[in-house]
Amino acid sequence: MNIYEQRIASLRAKMKEEGVAAYLILTGDPHNSETPLPYYGAERKFFCPFSGDNAYLLISQEAALLWTDGRFFISARQELSGTEIALMEMDSPGVPSLKEYLVSHDLFPLATSFLIAPVDFIESIGQLGEVRDLSFSYLVSDKPELPRDPLFELALPFSGQSAESKIKKVKEQLGQAQAVLISTLDDIAYLTNLRGHDIPYAPLFHSYLYLGEENVLFVDPVRVPETYSATLVKPLEELLPYLESVKDVPTLLDPVNLNAKLYGLFSSPVNGPSPSRLMKAVKNPVEIENTIKTQIKDGTAVVRFQMELEKTLKEKGVTDEWSLGLYLHKCRQSNEGFIEESFENIVSVGSNAAMMHYAPSEDKYSLVSAEAVSLLLDSGGTYFGGTTDTTRTFPIKPNAEFVHDYTLTLKSLIALSRAVFIAGSNGRCLDGLAREVMWREGLDYKCGTGHGVGYMNVVHEGPNAFRYKDAGRHDGANIVPGMITTVEPGVYKEGKYGIRIENNLLCVPAFENEFGTFYKFDTITYVPIETSCLDLALLSQEEKDWLNAYHAEVKEKLSPLLNEEEREYLAKKTQAI
Image 1 (tube, rainbow, N blue to C red):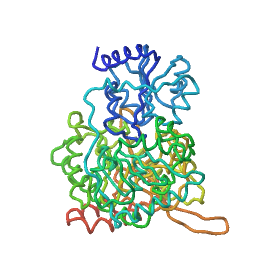
Image 2 (image 1 turned 90 degrees about the vertical axis):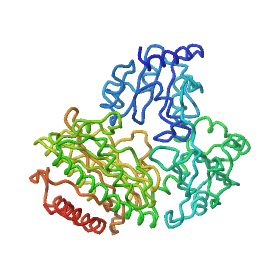
Image 3 (image 1 turned 120 degrees about the vertical axis):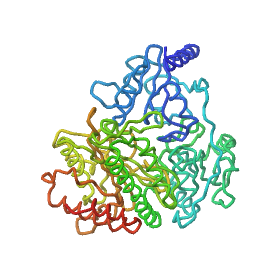
Image 4 (image 1 turned 45 degrees about the vertical axis):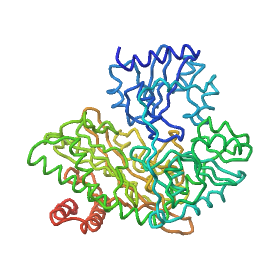
């Protein structure tokens, strides 16, 4: 019996004592964070070796199952191997959904933590059978402590708008509500202009924000800078009694994100998203200007990384994923204003790259040899001035199949990057522009084509995205000027390779006429796209013109920040095709 089976056995004994048929562990925290606060994320990791995001772990007396999405199918199979936990591949033919499984196996009463689960999730499951607010997280040993590090405040040259004015704008949009409770950490960071380090790779902090007759930030007061004055500040311990005192005030609550425990305190909820969800997605002029400057700085790090990769393979014939990731960190760290990576560096050679979110660690990594097909690098940085997310796939010893798929990936990226679309269009309809290139060849990638990007905030930001179907992420907003969204099509072939090319697109006005208002995209990622492995016969002249124009801009933007050797290298990588 391995360690996970021992832990699950102990859990099952406690479940039996409590009289519940199953226990559901969500990947989350009280704020519905994509990457949870480590204190709360520890529970799923304690019972299951899976390391990815967006997963449900269901334990019954007879079975243990993990549902996750297509980004993690390959890695989940590997990580769950040797355990009793069965992988349930979301949205795959013949695989029951969580709800279907609960009903077909009569797994009620179901226990889960109402502190973690959003209220709409609880209500949806509750229609099927009894759901109890019950947590067994006390079984988890060695939980990390909740952070108490000092927060820092963004001055106007970085935020472009005061916290007071943002809060005022939110309160002007409350409609029938007289107050709003905000629990999502990215919204709180945006509205307060405060940042922290409580979650890996995201400058967020454990807190709640109540805006009503009083505006109150609930957070450990010793963490808050003395200069902060946008709201009152009260300790987290005072949150529940405070909410109890205002429970009868009609309050805007987001059932998609607010946990069921807090939602249940209110007698007059007004359901809906906080206005801040859309406000922060539409960047102001200062945020846009700073982001473009940050993208240029960050582009130099990727250029230097590619130089190091090629140099090392030429001189030594071999390197490794972990060492390359450390080198990339050094490159970013040397850039002015760098704070931290915006997510874990994805440095994946050959077939490792077929696992979309594979990332090496100090203890587990692969060698990168001159005989490998390719290396995929997906990485980004958070700086004073913006957040980046860039992917490039570097050919090492590509074969004909790789060249074909790489060219398709570029065609897919160009198709969406060149789009002109009428106001009112959302990512559901625009996604098909990129994906159609793949569909013609019978290919597809098991993820969205792109996601919103925060500003000194989370790298995966809604409500904007490119995704042709509703995956329950609530990211189907209309694409409007000021939004920054990634475009990142790819081809992933298990046992062979993974290919992805990713840029960040800024939505801008295009033109107006008698038929309506039209928008387009400016590409604001400035990193060469490798051309040595392109099948030029598959590219139209328009696509070649787009790539040449893009590379001319990359050369213009990056050259002033590079030394002579680096400029010569960049000139080669941006030559017209």
